[in-house]
Image (cartoon, rainbow, N blue to C red):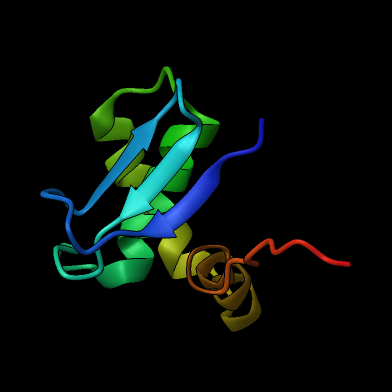
Length: 90
């Protein structure tokens, strides 16, 4: 399942996932104490485990963020920041 990801400073919450539209949005201005990476990992876990309860997702987020290497964190962050813009090529 391919999801579109984006940073959205106008949204009310820190992050949200829309399973119907297949979008994940993260607001870098509203991130919790763990910061932007924590919010991104949290929403990605919702994508990977849609049936898991919020408590499980939150616990797993802490574990996963601590275990991320620098290169893994960079790859994940690039999905949100450096999205390729599609323009018509001639």
